[in-house]
Length: 509
Image (tube, rainbow, N blue to C red; front, side):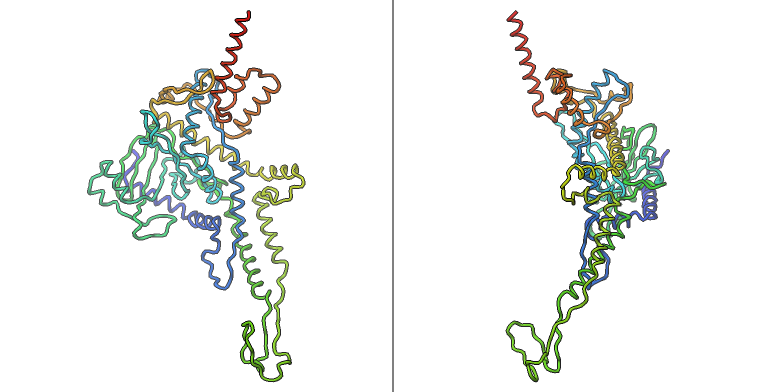
């Protein structure tokens, strides 16, 4: 039997923290976050040196994220083997999935997750079922998605990236101690144990703060008897004793930007380029200092003739001797070598090029030949295909988790389904029936490389233009609902027009 008491969970948590500390993950994340946000002079003791920041890393990361999520990710369920009865269920699941993704703001969280992956090395989604969420019907509860930092996720086997093969997982979070006590009280924790829940300063990336009122809460997940079990605890006390979630998959999706061998943690896009950023900032700071010191002439004067010099406009200056003799002049320092600015520009340009974000890709070119510019931009985006494929795999993983949550938590509820005549209708469906599906379900994710709604629209347009499809109703039914406003009304109008034409033809005969 798996040990699930609070003491054991805390020991596993400390083991996970030690592993991340040995990797230097906390320091790496802190440094990468500072450089991404522009705080690139932290800890530098140079009071006389200006501290400019030419943040080339942030723009490149923004370019990466924009290239990967520039097109909406299209997701649908389909059976591995064609099956008429299962096709209807897959269509129902696809429509419900679209609603869940919209409700959970998945598109915005995609960008946040990719940002974490590019900067920190890893992206993580944690999915959970909120039983109190309103759904507009008698059945309550909805699926929520939360983005977690890689410092808050601890794998039972930290040398493997495969989430579903982990012996256990630990998710750590900082919460208000009073809220944790109230949750524990509602879960039946004895009053004597409630007193042991107190604020602590044990947070990996946060500096210890007295009086912040926060406590580290651990959610432990493990598989037992083909089901995922969970327990929630703090350092000394269980907040909720172990319970069967009913899920078959860990509700965690994981993605690495660049995989590293024998570690669950990946490497971000900017970690290895921080020395380049430091070199550019230092060179530019010294260039500014050189301009400050040497660009403006300095006044020199004969102290034997002038006791004190004043720069006030119109103020008289007393001199000793003939005032017509030269008593003051100007002097300039040496000009800065042009190699400094050349080195700054060269370092910046090479860094962006090696990251796959050239001037053409970023749009920093004169578009005299647009075709060539587009070709170069597409070629520059090719190295991102590996990250794009990893992102599609990430989406597929969490979509399968959503399907698993529908099976375990939805029960019977009304969902929106397509109808043969076009449009949609409300239908009650028992999601527990997904337990007995005769076939597994494949998930198609992506754009044109896998399956794209836009590609489907273009194909339907081509078939209709070439006369292969001549029926307007058939054409409209093949177009995804969100691409045509009031699609149901248009189909109804076409159907009424066709019926009227058939009626008129019958009367004529």
